[in-house]
Length: 477
Image (cartoon, rainbow, N blue to C red; front, side, top):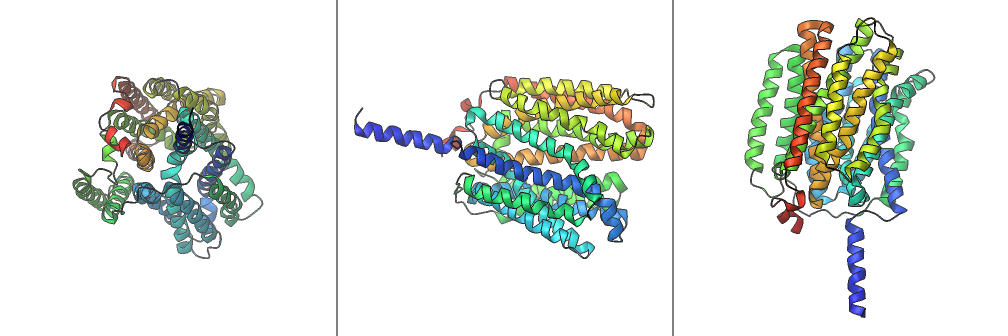
């Protein structure tokens, strides 16, 4: 082999390494940074929910007004998901992700030092801005860290960390609130976040982005559209007021203008180019439908267990933890299988099991034993955990690398929309039929999960991504 051939071979290997994951041990450090960031964000969310009554009491505010501690956070995430994802593709995913960690820490410090309700809500909004960067670009960062052949494994491990944090959060919050005041729930983010930030600066892959100018008008329209639709739907379900109708109408109008503006663009802020690819479009639809089915038991079950079956908060939390605990085991296995088998098949199997679990969950009654409730919840978690990792992998892995941020934004947005319609459905049914409507809700969710399984299986008939003409121009660019 002559010197020119050797140099070319080395250049090829170097390019391959730079575009297909990080070398070890740097990859392991980058994974640690991602996991710490995820754990911080998830734990913070569960801490705030657990501490909300105590915060409302100390802030001398009503329960209804205290909900804005959560709403301010959710509103910031909702409005910024797609714009932040697009910004990451333009200026660099690493830069935006690091900024997100920094914003989350600033928001946490503001919340901990709040001496008024308005200051606390403002801190939560800043936290939400940081969380939008983390949520939108987390999957894209995983794609840049792991080799393509191990992407499913990486996404499965992420799901495991999310579930572990979700399961541990309520217990940790209860223990901490027994010995310290609620501001410490925000201060605990500082050591975790600073460690994540330092490691991320050293380990995350460099990314210069595509260098295109950012479309602020589309970003504003996107924020108005998603924010108005999500909160309009929640307002309608809760109050059936004119404000809800006005918000929904505002969201629809903003959506029309946004689609007209984005329709023919090669790399739009709303990832229409990705949605036109059958495997990605079907996967996003599967996500919207399935996360709605998931949110129904998540919202309805605590009320049903406590108010209808007479269980305590501790007993309810213990039973509900069966779901994330099972996902901790199932998600990594499903992620590894996703690197070898079609996501449509794995997702269809998982959602079918999820549908069976939901149908069995509808059979619980006042005479049901704790074990009888727990194993039904565990079946639901097993099915959903088996679906989630392969579905996330196909959405992220099917997009061109320079659209990884957009794919991550699509993933997060589809999850948000699904959770919104699920929560709105529960609220509406409770308004109409009270807690007695819960078994009907579970049976309806089982039907929806079965529908999602069918949609997932339709992906088996879609062409391979590398054979899709819609992706070829983007991959070559």
